[in-house]
Length: 147
Image (cartoon, rainbow, N blue to C red; front, side, top):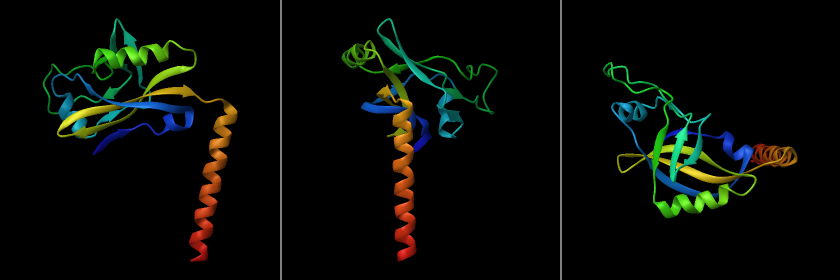
């Protein structure tokens, strides 16, 4: 079950490699996330000292929580193996590559995040994507009218 989706990523980047990772959460963040009170639109992933972190992910504090609710936009650690971090780090060190968050979902009751190794699109690539999308929409419309 997808809880949050980052649709803009597919327009701004070419996705090359995907990976499902866990997120280190504290307190009532899990309840808030399961209630759908999160956003990953402005989030990005960084590798710091051999560990991967997601920054800018917004999790609204749970309304029934205590005074000790964690901050809304705190830095959260991602849970993955060292070899996976190393593989992503080698690619990110090349020019034009970055790590982006695709979506947050539940997997067997656990909160998981899909991240991807992405290469930025140029403006002409974005225009091409829009043109393809328009063609597809026009074709679907024509098929619908025909039948």
